[in-house]
Length: 136
Length: 151
Image 1 (tube, rainbow over the protein chains, first blue to last red):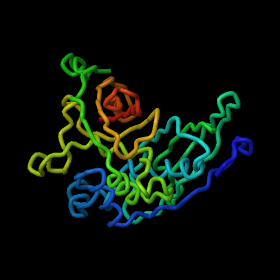
Image 2: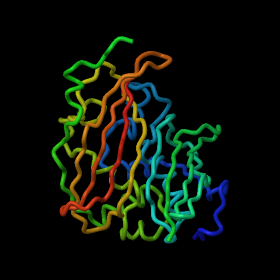
Image 3: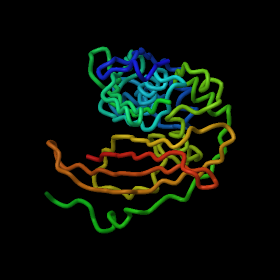
Image 4: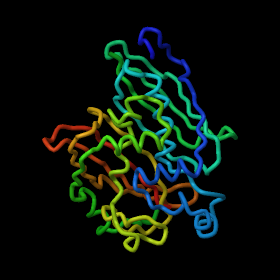
């Protein structure tokens, strides 16, 4: 829960680590009805497409940075816009850190702009993102 | 730079897929929420859909024999491109109201633009699509702009 008045530009949003296992990845691809083999067929992903392992879905990683925002605002604000970009691949078993920070506040609209990131253990950003939320 | 985009390809800009009609169920929201590791009760209980829940509605439901060898369904909106290595680019969504169980939604995907740029390693083709989600009555729910990059 976040009070608009206490938010300052530069504030870090609470970060969270995600390590998708094969069961979670199966559930995700079943939930979105995604039969793309690089997300569940290890032999296909490595031998046919040359990846080092099973590939994490980009939109799953996008969802993880979305949760940084939705968990931060709770019921105090609504999501106005949210975007993410697929920059690098990430693979099954990697621990990914989702986080973000406050970039701008607009007192006239009570809107707050945040930047978001998902990083791998090497610190490389695989999915950058951004969101605008409007506080009540 | 050599123009890779033929008039036939460019003529497809502005075309749309036939609208998809879906009925949102609590169970579908719960499955999505659990599989993405959500913490918020409203998502886990299926009272409201997380922001990217609608992504699954872009997946065409086809039998295995209708899919390509890699498991992907052919994207009928996007014409065959002269560059074959396709990667997902950006996704940007503007939200008008949350998706909730019981919603009857109409989802339309429009080909907004196809253009070419020269990258450091050669030509790139950018494909921009917009997914428009409304209620059956036509009230806006969300608009998602997505880009693909072919190299």
